[in-house]
Image (cartoon, rainbow, N blue to C red; front, side):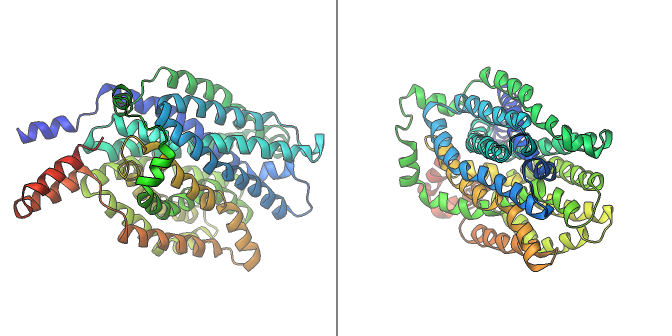
Length: 458
């Protein structure tokens, strides 16, 4: 009886698979849109900023990237609670329109040579709209998929959002690699850089179509049917979930800096600081991110078995110990060593990300889940993820040490490690249930009732 119930609880329904595809397509678009900017940073610097110092132009480009991230917390504060009020599906439709539209706009903007200072101003505006829309993507996509997933497979299912994000980065990196290989440098500088941005339009239309066909999650529909949808999810989240939100801020520091270092900073770091050719840099990036994308779902499945907390601790501890060696390998001038260094960081991110999405969603009830995730997520991404390229480039310029960014990453990883050890609670259903089963006889029926209530949490 128990084994049959166990098997039933692990089945992934056709509806859940449909949600994974639909949420995944939109998530792909969002990460493709945002990641494309970092991949094309050097070309944007040449077209939108005029400076005799290439490093200064690159810093200006990264500063514009960071400005977009300033809008993410506002987007999260708006779209996260909106998902708790009108539904995850409807909110995700709005988000995909904003992000894809803003990215397409970047592809048609006039350059500095054409309109002067208006060019970077327009780039800033497009980036701000993109950042505002992106603030609502992850929390709503994760909440939607989480609420469609079997309780014992939530780590595996939600980890696909992170894997798809990396696949989007691989697609963007691969596309840029193809363009660089078939176009001359002059062609790439003149018009080739626009192509990845222009592709956002058909991708956005596809994402819009798929998401409009999607039903909302059973948990949200149940809240609607019972009249239990929160009237003020933001206030409720801060009133009832503020402690968990603070803990997530500390946990998400590493998510922000690790993910964005790999996707947005390291591609330009390899070429502008370490002397690799553009082709070598993008090849290393594509291989490393591709392997990371494959590894994430396996790590998510592992988190369902061993728990979220051990995976979060392992990933953050690995960053503390191995970030400097990884940067050192990248600095050796060998493409193979560079790929190895990036793979070290990528696999650590995979271990961390595999557990993270489910761990975030499991901290909150369905009434406030999207908003309570969106607020700390976007604060962390804005403060640390969006500023990674700028801070890392500034550290290298200021210290003259090409490995200086590694110490910044290690310090922030230590912050996350401390929070993971001391503050995060285990939420994986199997681990919570196993621990409860082991102590029920000694703790009495009250403990059993609390355990049952915990595993029923939607």
